Image (cartoon, rainbow, N blue to C red; front, side, top):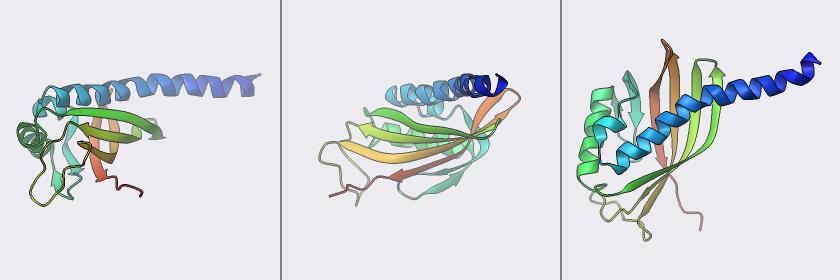
Length: 151
């Protein structure tokens, strides 16, 4: 009997463990839509690593927040973000790797040398690594890679 009930109990535990992570990811999209780079960065760990879809690598929450303030005030101004969580995998009970199908919609301009997608949607694969410390989830790594069309 115990063997039959354990998978159900583990699934319920995973759903409870996933809820705060899903809430953080939803809050990121809401902050983006509001054009608020500071709020977008509020759950980033102080020394987190960040790789954006242009290949820039930065370290620390202040750099992450500043970069998002910049892009939300310039070429991504007025855009909306749509996250579809593909998978949450708990490497340990306090470490979660989250794979996200990420879209930025309403793009009208991009930095020099980068084409604006014909449909105005920049698509990427976003991986966020969460670590729980003191009962709170922090984003320790944020890695965003653009998705190439498959024509």
